[in-house]
Length: 267
Image (tube, rainbow, N blue to C red; front, side, top):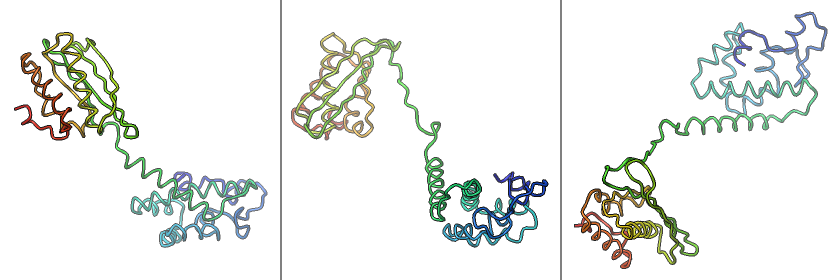
């Protein structure tokens, strides 16, 4: 749009007449004066209302004295970033309004055009403020040691009926699945209790098939600070320590003190 304005290549009626085409050169929006770039974007009665509603009246006065269309564009590009973007968005929307009027279609009111500009600016702000994929940390599954099996577990909680669900998967250092399972428990006190029940279910399932050299991993960052200190150092421990961890998790779930788990619990 700005490139075409700078080169005066938009289909204003005076531009068309210069190509020896006989037509009514009045502005299709106000039907008062001949239409050129200055009138269409700055001087038309309807477009002036839009500039005022957008609180850009002072900005509109800046390019009024521009002798050429290129100076007009240069004045816009020299504005502050937010003002420049808002003006460019408005020029694009207003050209759509002008084309509808030229085609004899029903055109939006001044407030309709202003609202269209504000919606577009809101969409732009949302895209700009949204973190890019490159800025979002990517959590990749890490391989355990060759003689250790890694257990990933997770739990869910429905507060309406107090139902908790949990699941786990055990994989070796190659990433191959060794064992997996899921469980549904009722009643469950809260989401943290559901995480602990999933941990307990995973440990009991591992115990039943004779797995003791393990590494535990969970993905719930809110609950990791509570449960993780107890189980994060399980990699490569002896079977007796495995049974101690299993017993402590059972005991804490039974007592209802899951939210008080700390590293000292293991000690």
